[in-house]
Structures are given as structure tokens and as C-alpha cells.
Image (cartoon, rainbow, N blue to C red):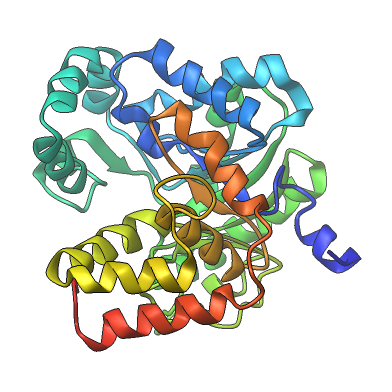
Length: 335
């Protein structure tokens, strides 16, 4: 890695994988989630992504236990613009029994996750979460609360949580961007940026999103390659959730297709040549400017994820994957 690349990762603990905490809150007990954070650190994860809305307001406070133990060896992304509502925070404090029921009913859990993914998603989302906006005052209040919840004096990445392009224009006009630059200069944040679902945006404010010094967005093997970024740092998420089910549906529809993938990629049931490992490895290659967020509730999956990235794969692995993915797309499988 050259010096320019090293500078890109200056506020991130790992250039390849970071731990995304949103999915961790499918675990019903706080002690289970804390053990998961500890296991992620032990596996080699050094950057953790949280937000005030995750865990219905509990995520930052629960991550603080790890930060107190590990100090400056851990870096953090947190966000502003969406928070848990008063009702959501009340539910968050007693969410254990609810999550135990959902854990026993995976399909219901998945449906609820989609329905309550944010304040714009559904009635449930509006009950649990509230948009706080992207004004300078909203950023100031959220930063103060996050620093207190995390128990530290600096947050490495402080980013706008899913703003619409026109909201970026308002944020710039309101002085939010100038405020974030001031906080970066003061050292209270290492950098600022924007989290969006898709960077392929048009319209008012889209250029502001793509010019942010840090950009986080969804990416997987069945999406078009990300556009050329002016951002110096990029994090992506959704690598496995976006690609693995679609490939497995393809295999179910055509059993011979599985064997083609096995033959082409020398796939195994587990280890760094497993299908999940190959997908994860290829997604990190798509992002040379920062980490891919990896999310799991299973501690035993953390070390294999790191081993997948470290694996000395064949030089033509990307080309082979590209051909196989193109075949899935051409047949319209699992779309």
C-alpha cells in the first residue's frame, strides 16, 4: 500500500474490514452483544460503525464498554440525522423479550427489520425513530450526546445519516458543513462524511454528497461498479446480504450452476474458499479506498471473515468471479 493509500485510512482501524453494529442488535441480551464486540476485537476488527438509532438508542452506550477497555486501538464511526424516538428508547431498554421472540421466528424478524428500518420506512419506523435533521444545531447536539454515550473525547468519523440531496444543500446553507470542518480542526472529530444507500445520485445537492471527504454506501457484486469518487475515504456495506441469497437462489434453480462455481473458484464448504468468503473478498477489492462493513451475530464467523481477506487468492479470481456473476445477471436469476 502506498503512502497516499495509508493517508486515506488514517482514521480507520482496518483498511479492509470494519464491524457494522446494526445487525448485532438482533441479539436479545446486552451481555451477548458486548461479548460479540469483544470477539470482533479479538478477531482483528479495529473500526466499529454505530449510530444513535441502532439498538433503539442503545448501540453507542453498549460499545463504550469495549472502548474503555481498548482505548485508542479502536476507531469509531457514528452518525447524526436519525435518532431513536422517546418511545423507541423506552422499547430499547426492555427489548430483550421482544428480540427473543423474534429470534425464534426468523421470517418475522426479517420482515420487522425491513418495516422498521428508519422513520420513513413505515408506521413502525415512525414510532421507533425520528428524523433530527442536518442543521448545524442538530449536528452539535448529536455530537455532544454521542461523545458522552461513547465515553470519549474524539470520534474518528461523524457522518450525516442518509440525507436526501436537497438536505445536503440545506446543510451547507445552514453552516453544518462549516461546523463539521471546525470540529475536525479542533480534533473532536477525525473526519466527517455522508452515509447514503446509493452514491449514484442526481439532482440538487448530489454533488455535495459525492464531494464529502468520507462516503459510506451499499455495494455488492450485483450492483454496477461504484462511480469514481472524489472522497478520500469510502466504506461500503451489504456485501453478503446483497449477493449471497441471489447466488444461492441461482444454484437452487440450476443445480449444475453450483458445480460450475465450485470448479471455477475451487469452492469449499468452509474456510477462505467458501462462497461467502469469496464474495466478501471480491467486495473489498471493489473498494480500494476503505473498509467493507461486516455484520454478524455469530462470534464464530468473525475470524473466518478476517482470514478470507488475508487469503492469498489466485490472481485471476476477480476475472472468474466477474464472468460467473455476469452469467447470473444474464439469466435474470434471483433478481
